[in-house]
Length: 476
Image 1 (cartoon, rainbow, N blue to C red):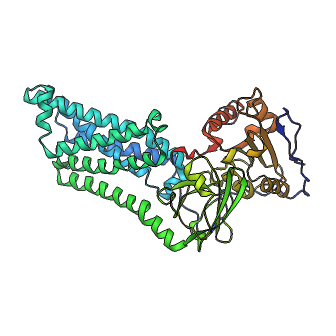
Image 2: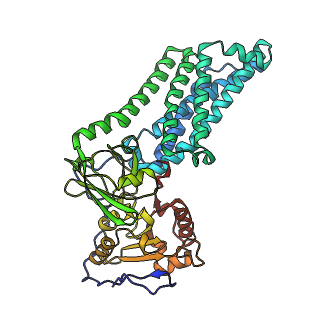
Image 3: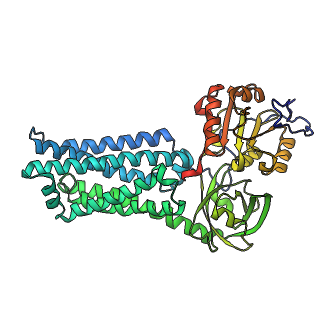
């Protein structure tokens, strides 16, 4: 019979002793979680999305190839390379915008954190293509006119569409510099987000430039297709970034109904609305919350649901880590809320095995607490490991213990400073707590450093990387 206690491997390990309920018949693992409020939300598989992006790049390269005029002249070679890199850069900008458009099928299937990583990596490639396009075009023009690079630059800037391209390039570079880790750490999150909005203006400048280029302007069909692609992306952005959030705000009329202290620096916020079943929010997902009060109304903060949706009530649990999260403690009942979502792929849909390990660190317990309550399973199928520096860092402890009792699930607190000699997340320690660890799916949520270390330990302990499911909200 499963139990929720073990022999502590170290004095800092705190075992949980609870009464074990009578055994119940194990539940079968479904292929999808129970549906609420209609059919389950569609999900786009990450592999299919990646394949579609690569295929699109291939189509763009093919379109360039069909129009290319082979020539051994130096200026023609430069121009040919400039045309190819320019088209690929334009296509890449559209892809980057779509990745961050908050399309539900993409967010739910790929995951917000993975999209953010793809966006960051792709952004660097796009900047490289933009730089290569500018350099090749300049060299080609200089070779064609027989002038030096300085003179060629001055002449090119006299063309309006070239000036538009330069303005867009400057804006893209500003966005890229603000996203560099060394700069990002020194810039307020709100400032970084506002700078990132410049990428939309940069894309518009780039579009004006592309319509004047020979690869697009030389054919009416190409002009129409390129224009439709940009118009479609613009409509998607407006719909999911502006129209949908406003529509949800008016339809569901969310308001704060209570703020509950969970720990010295952590509170839970209860938000109630109408018709919340229509959102089809699943345990493990998050919303972007905008509280309409001074100091918070201009910032959308990503917080996971810390409990399943019940009686048209949503709950989040927030730790005070900065100015905005500290203000959340002072929210008053009746405060209006705009919540965009749900987002995220850390849900039951990722499950592939009967046994599941939930591994949380600090306030990362919030999405896993909701999964701990709702993931189907019988006695011994669920194990929750909760890492914290001491008992004051354990959030929602009474709820976790009640769930463990009711579900006959294993619950272990792993306490101690992160720099202690004993590492409770080391492969040997994990296998000691979960002997058949390699047979589990693992859901992981915690601070970035803890999550990276835990992922490495799990892989060394025999868990395939494809069965470690996590999301990092740092960049979402």
